[in-house]
Length: 132
Image 1: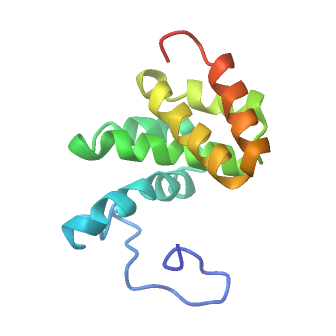
Image 2 (image 1 turned 90 degrees about the vertical axis):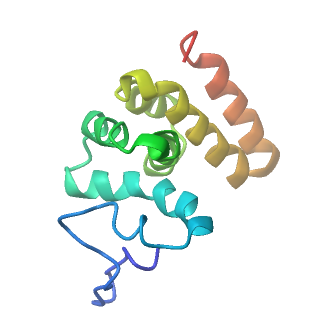
Image 3 (image 1 turned 60 degrees about the vertical axis):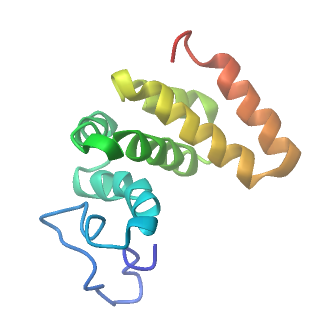
């Protein structure tokens, strides 16, 4: 994430505005999962926060689609500060990727807040549409 945070006036050479997935295909194979998990955030920052567009772009990543969609769920959870109605709304915009988006959101919520987070993630899963 340090590569994408420019608050301190530093521009990373590992960013390419024309290719938000860069450098994911160039990093070591063992690091690609982590890299593609963060691509959704690059999509969102380049499209003004359009979750439908970000999900569509995740869908073009072939074998990395699922990872990207789960990252989109992480983004939804973090941006909304775990507001479940808003997380559900944003993940619904992912259409066929809704389930993976919700899984990413639930993991993020559960991992961040101990037992309270686990209970909140459970509530999110219970409120998810059937089949999502």
